[in-house]
Length: 305
Image (cartoon, rainbow, N blue to C red; front, side, top):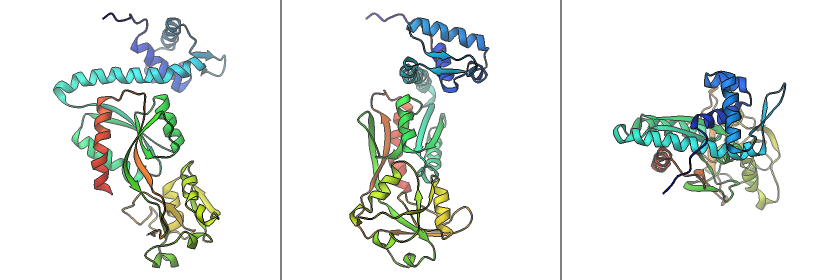
């Protein structure tokens, strides 16, 4: 079998990816610890090799990616990751699994789940490093598609056919109430009983729509009294008596960072659960270290829930 002779180098691809992330030759030179002319020359050679323009050079405002540059960026990231996997696999023959995992996590899940899973995995595989990103669903899916994330721990929300999703468990929503709220005296609550209570909304795309859908059978929606995109802020508002909220990842502590306390109550209503799982780009060839982490997550999560 004959193989084509490549007219570009991995170094050029790395320069391309870093420059595309910072959109400045000067900033890229600082990140890469090389001279600005070296980057500029290498990228000009890469554009010549590809036969396409990757960047638009603006006289006073840095760079922007061309449509061709955007199309090639994800592939360049994946190729660099595969090259890293080749190198780490060679090392693993003697030293065990290693490498870097870029892991995304739904922001509402991250505080309760991410530190423990990473700590347990690193205890078993100390040569593995993590780069993490805790954001909403739209940014997670964007990161998977542009190659900046290897995988994401998230819910089955707004997934399209290009995303491969491996479910790990079902999580049912529950009400979170001020500790002394009258409804907290009951073993469970109904959705109808919450309609006229002040609602503290976890204001994340897709999450807010899911929580709103729980009330569809009632023909009414609770008007939010407060909004926050930060789960800890939502819990703090509830614990300080500003209203109730709805969450669905089990919590071990009923106390917020300011020392206030809240209560959790299940719903009487038959509320639909969300699937928690691992999302990956379906067309991406998964590296060995990423596969190992994905396999690790299910038993680790079982211990947590």
